[in-house]
Length: 205
Image 1 (cartoon, rainbow, N blue to C red):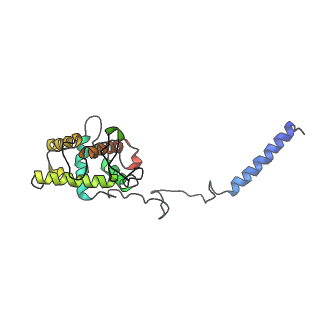
Image 2 (spheres, helix red, strand yellow; image 1 turned 90 degrees about the vertical axis):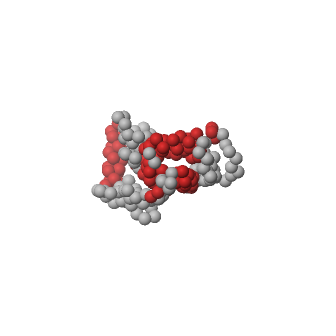
Image 3 (cartoon, rainbow, N blue to C red; image 1 turned 60 degrees about the horizontal axis):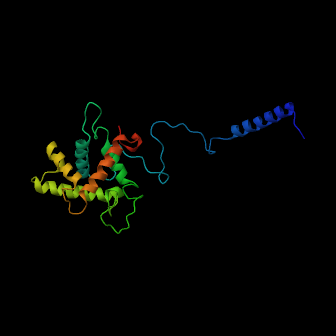
């Protein structure tokens, strides 16, 4: 049976009235009460990761953060085109990444065996990134301390820091527990990610 124009319009009004009534009874998209949020974002324990505390490290200890802060500013110093890596808060980005799933190697195969891979194969270490960072930084600081009367990397002059970073980049500086070139490659990649990332992740301020 066909339906005329008048009947179609009447049906539309009926459907529209029913929808309006349903919307009036509905408190929100998921049925919850409407709520106005002001100030900090709400968070409930067990429902999501806790919001980061501004200025507090999640993974890196004070000595590791001092190394990272000094090193990233040698890679991206301030100039007329933009801020330095620390001014962009890259250390905070790195700290949060190492504290999370990335740092734990969530998307890495870590089961071995571990023959030395080709550069094109990417990350090939047996350590998760957080362990890789912690081990490499400790080895670097031990080397710096022995060669510079107990000084830390952050205490070296800028050109001495640059020289050591170049030795890591080339692999000429042999670290006892990790491949220095592989670590520097990962470090540089992470620094660039932090500098250009969405600020929600802690960098690119």
